[in-house]
View (cartoon, rainbow, N blue to C red):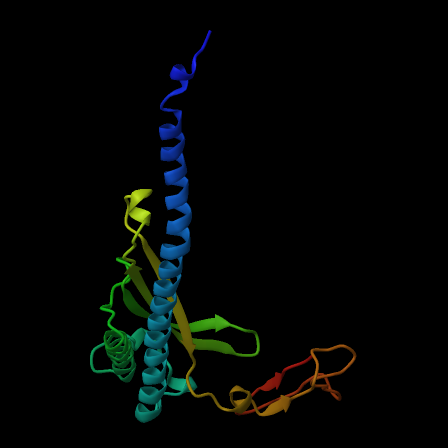
Length: 212
């Protein structure tokens, strides 16, 4: 037969389990808010870095006369070329803006703290070739927790990234001679209609339609 003496000490075990649960909820409430705030701040830092790089790219391309027709990604990392100056201005502006927000990044994102600019000039869109520069900023921030270390002994950090896309200045309808601007993509409405003989010659331009 069990006696009350056999049940002594059970409250200590229950109290220990309850304390772990309590600390878990407290960590979620207190430290969770801190982690979210730190992540939001890091996201703002990445956003501003990429936007600063994009603004620098636009300003530099305009100043150097880099527009759609001469936008050439093969010169993006070639010393002395206009596109190389665009590349350099992007990195300088993005890294500087991140530093003004107390984040240290460089031109390498392999460690999740950096910014890279990727140039693309060969995306065939049918009526035109898409050309652009993607500025990708990545920031990792660690959070100082108050209670979470009681239930988790690893680092508490979050990584965020932002991509801003910049395109070169482009002539209306990409320089085509005949342009059809209708308010829908087909749907019974024609964009450009050619009629007459089977041969149509367009010299010094092309035909562009944003519909059919």
